[in-house]
Image 1: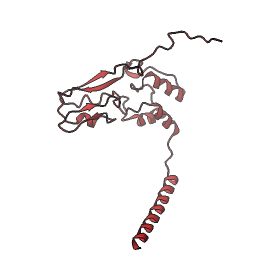
Image 2: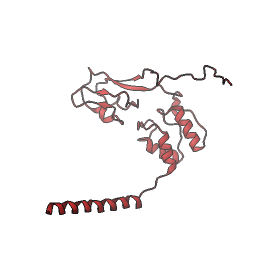
Image 3: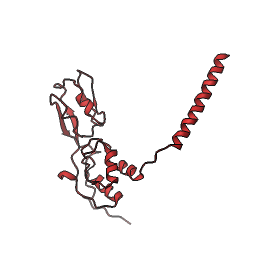
Image 4: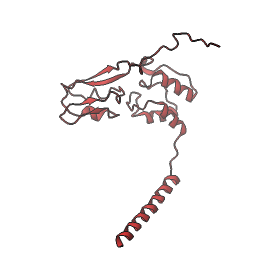
Length: 184
């Protein structure tokens, strides 16, 4: 019987503390800038740092404060155009002379040369590299964003950035090449 009372008391305490935490979360919520939220959803979320900021969220905050919108190579021209529409400014070409739509590349580890140091795993911002200490590492192609951050820390230089082979889903179809007419 005392066990039942203890369980009921514990359940009531959990309920009371849950209600207090729920109220505190609503009452003391920090409101963010809605423009920063919109910019952050447009950015590709690769967290690669190629824009000069440590991630997409800090770059979104910088754009909201007036920084250039053309510093995101992984996003390409499409992201620049969306940001220009949102911010009401003119779209500019990508900074640094990047091509309009960069070729998507992914990391490839030459596994026979890998010494298993895990430096590439530590450098990868999206956890696309799997492996363990002193064991072979490999890259999850679907997760890799092509940010190139894993190449430099590799002490044996066994990581290459290779273009993704086009598939039916990634092929750039020229949909406007065939004229389409409406039949009435």
